[in-house]
Length: 124
Image 1 (cartoon, rainbow, N blue to C red):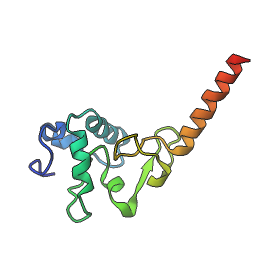
Image 2 (image 1 turned 90 degrees about the horizontal axis):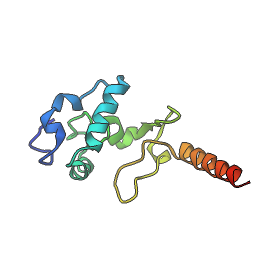
Image 3 (image 1 turned 180 degrees about the vertical axis):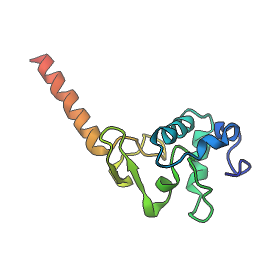
């Protein structure tokens, strides 16, 4: 990744090797994603990532997305609750942000249903 193309102030500029985890190493990918989510340049990186094409994308994790997640042809993500890999359209977007949630819509619906049922039981 060319640090001169990235927004200034990014944590990844200080630890670039962290941003190129082996895609099969879930914990290393998660560490890179968490680094992005806690970075002061996260929103600027999101805008930068949206300008990339498969030909200009340097790979690695950018704006909390892996190369595969940024490539529209491969647009999939693994849900952090059920562990299933699903199309990106099965993940809602964060309110006011250009990024998708890490939990699929199905798991979010299940969580909401369980919360509603537990509240109904307490009220009964």
